Image (tube, rainbow, N blue to C red; front, side):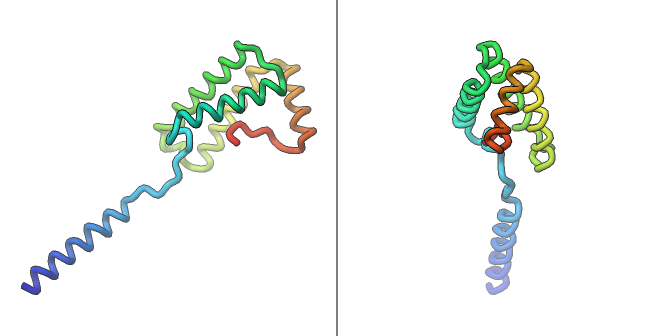
Length: 124
C-alpha cells in the first residue's frame, strides 16, 4: 500500500513538474496577440506621420500594406522572436516606409526628428 501511494505521488510530482517546465515563458509580440489594437496603433502612427509630412492617400495605403506585410511576416517566424531578429525586421520596415516618402517629405521628417531631439519610432 505504501509503495502504491508513493508511486502515485511520484508520478503526479513528475507530471506536474514537467508541465511547468514546458510552459511558454517568452514574450510575444503585441501585434500577434491582438491585431485590432495593433491596427489602431498603426493608424495613429500613420496619422501622426501624415501630420508631420503630409502624406497622400496612395502613400498611406502603401504604408498600411507594408505594416500588414511585416505583421504577417513576424507572427509565424520563430527566428524573428529574438531581439536581434526583431530589430533587423524593424529596420527593414522603416527603410521601406522611408522609400515611400518623397525626398521633400523625408527632409520634413528629419527636421521634425532634430527639433524634438528624439528618434521617430514606428512601434512606440
